[in-house]
Every structure is written in C-alpha cells, then in structure tokens.
Image (cartoon, rainbow, N blue to C red; front, side):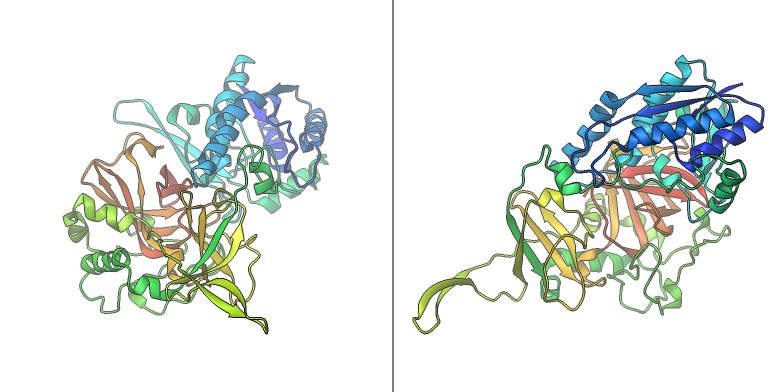
Length: 480
C-alpha cells in the first residue's frame, strides 16, 4: 500500500513518516509550498525554504523519496482571498480549518493520488476508524487525539467522508513528549524543531499589517460600554426572559448571563451545584455531557423559530453621543467635548473595525482601567468597535449561537439532525477550549447551539464543532 506523507519539516509529520516506514508501508514524502509573500510576517523571511530543507533531510534520513509541489495559487484563491473577504465583512475566519479542507485534503491529496498514493498521511493529533453502515458502505469516524494538550481534531472539522476515506493519522494515539522522544532516538533533523505558529503556511504575522495588503485603514471610535446599557436594553432583557422560561424546575437561582470561563485553561469558580460541569464529561449522558442539562427539552421545543433567533442574536450597540461647548483655561478658550453618557464613553481611536475580533484584548492601547478591556462588538457600517472592562463584562458572554442551514456540515453524514430534532453534544467554539455541554436545536432557519453556561467571545466566522464523547460529529460557521 502506497502512502504519501505530507512532510512539513516539523517533528510531528517527521515521526508520522518514520512510523509508517517502520510499519512496512511504501512511503513517499511530499512537501507543499503554499505562500511566497512575506508582507506582515514577523520574521520577514521565507520560513518555507528552511522547512523544505529540513523536510528533505528527514526524508533522506528515513530513506523515502521526496517530492515538492507548489500550491500557492490554490492557497491564495481558496484560503487567503477568503480570509480577506471575511475580515472585510467584520467576521473572523479560521484559515487553518480552511487550509485542511481546501488544500491539504483536497488540492494536496489530488496531487498525492496523481503520484500513485492510496492514502495521504499527516502529523495531526487525532484518530480515525471506520465501520459498515446500514447500507453496507464504510462510515469513517474521527476522534480527538489521545494527548488532550495537543488534540487537533478541531482543525479537521470540515472534512468529508470522501476525504477521510484516504486520510491517515499515524501519531493520533501518541502523546507529544513521546513523539519528541521517538524523533530524538531516531536522530531526526526535526527532533528539536519548535512547533509552527500563526496562520497555516504563512507563519506568525502582524495581522493588521498582513490584512492591509487589501483592506485600507480607516480611523474610527473605540466605545466603552457600561453595565447600565444592559439594564435598559430590551433585547438583553428578552434573552434573559427566554432563558428563564426554559430552565428546568428546581433551579431557583437567577438565570446565568455571564460566563464563568476566562481562558483556555482557567475558569471562575461556579458555586451552584446544578450548574457545575466537568472537563471530561460523562458517558452516561447523551453526547458525553457532564449532566442532562439545565434546560428542559420540551420547553426548548415549544420556542418559536423567531424566539430561537432572538436568543441567538448578539446585543446591538447604538449609543449616541452629543457634544457640548465649554470654556477652558485662563483665556476661556471655547472647546467642544462629548456630554457624559450613562451607557458608555468614547475612550480612543482605532485604524479600522475590520482589524479587530470579538474577545480581543491586545492592540487596543487604551489605559486608565483597573482590568483589561476586551472587544465585545464591531460595527463595520459606523466603523466603531465596542469594548468592555474585565472578563465578566456582560458584553463578552452569550448563551446561544446560530449556524445558517448552508453552513451546517456533518462529518457523520449518516446521522444528520432533522428539523425539530434536539440533541445533546459537547461543543467548542475555538481550538484549545475545553468542551462545553450544550443542546443542539435543529430548525428550518438554522441550527441553534444553546450552551448550559454562557460562553465568552462567540466570534462570527469561527467554527463551532460538536462532539459525541470524543468523536467529532459535525461543525458549522457561527453566523453572527
């Protein structure tokens, strides 16, 4: 059996190649170049040239043929142009997910097959198996990697059954330290090479500089939003009312509107035992969730489509600022300033709303606050970005998101949800986030994901991915 290994020059794909060779496969290496331009890259040079050099040495050390393919035109059209288009609309795409769907397991896979490959292997930390479906045809499944600190299944969330049929993941059941040990023991040139960072095949970049290749800067206001805005906002009150109406009996505490989640590794302490979650989940509950949820399925089912939409829509910010004139200094020079507003304040300027993303903390350059400021919304029409102070700011948290019908993707094509169906799954909305318990609600106007606990920084354009225990079942683009 002939296997093509996508050899990147990193330690993971190098060990994958070595294990395939030791297992007796007819292995050849294929290195792909996907990017030429160094605009915005922090190193300012062509990292791919060094990667190719290392990859070629690895192939020579293992004793497998080495080939090279330039897919930069495909990458530009199918990944980078998509990135620019999404950012121009105020959305935040995930280029790594797109790269896997459009390049590694499409354009690259086709090239590998043309060279005689039966399978294409990569160094991803995930696992795959197959079984016969009811029609006798194989059904392919993809699981989280054994190493919880390196699980990369999220990045493969858009793969199809046809792509998985030819995919192999040789290191999916190995932990990273063991991969390093194997590489060092075999004296592979990549054994001590650091893991790649940044945009897939582009590298670590100064994102605004990178995006300014096509998106022009445009100065706008940074508006800080105060708590009082939510106290008087009708949409925020409606969300609270809907959530309260679908909670199970016996939950006497006020509906939770603010996340306990701080970062990929930390959470605020949750005191309410009815709302507690575990990271590992529980196989006894549907989807491997830690409980059967705080919301009543029948009450969720009774909600109208418009109520589900209202629940999933983010709060909109429209804070008007009026000016007033005043006299300043000994000479009583007439000046203009904004009147005080109980809902918010203009606290700075930015270079373009398209350069910012929900949950972003760095790059705001605004002082005078006890806690960090976070981007809670961007408005492309007014070119404003809205910020809130602290991890527990109300604008950072949402309980429900929506995926439009055309953006729903089932890896398990044999078990799609039908309109009106409700299931429990574990979900993450970004890589490295611990899986969160959630209820998925399928309607004609989209798939709604209702989390047991509010989530921090739901970002339009990113992918929500759902798991049944540790099997990745499907994914979709967060609509807004």
